[in-house]
Length: 324
Image (cartoon, rainbow, N blue to C red; front, top):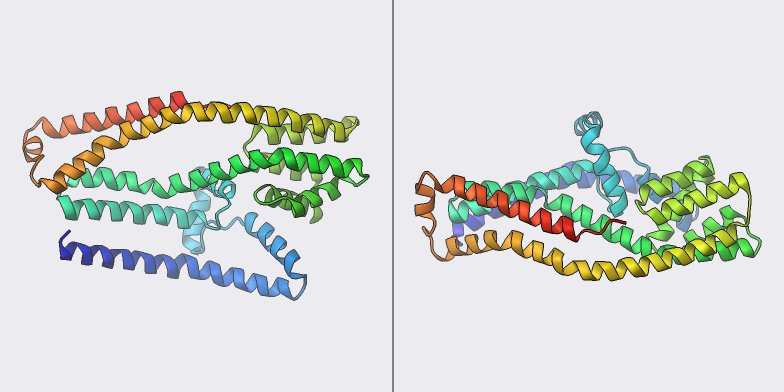
């Protein structure tokens, strides 16, 4: 890579990173530090951490920049699903920060390809793909966190059932699960416990838990608890049966996911191999695609090939996807 290209990339990256730190990271860090200082003098440190986490998760601020925050609140069609995805991932970022990362990734991808290969069309395609990288990362973290929740959930239900059999109230059982179970199950149960402890009705707190965790098992749990509160019955026995069913479902789904992983990797190889080989040929043999770009039919053929590659990728990925 030529030296001017490296210098240009470093300068652009430094400017974008500095702007992101000054506009997003520093204001959020200062605000959280001030909040922790106020809580530290009023409550014990462990409780302060729990309350701070609850406040952070219920925070409706979409960006630390007031103008951007207002714009994102107005565009709730985009910011709403993005905020729910961030909540599921457990990442300590705002919607505005994720969108800024998308912009930075797109600009960086475009500049790198344009300065190295001088192919504007390829640079535009790579830049467009790079825009989605931060969103893909947040989605990956959300799916990983939900999968971990699904694995820990039966043990949490068993712990709650044993607490009820020992004579504890349901609210006390929620607190025990929040304290003894690791994240993400302990974190979500802590949030549900804090919400009802601070005034939210228990049915609403449980329904919020079912909405934050997009699992059928979580909805079963919420439905079972709310039904027992209205109709009565032995809740501990219901929870024992529910934990057993969830464990069996998890075993079957785990086996099916292992079988489908081969097809997902096939989709990744089919989708990325033409782009990777094209960039490699251009870097190793500059001018390799000049004849294709100079011909009038060249750009339409490249566009059609990219569209067909994208269709093939999503078709294979969709076939391998398991519906729960």
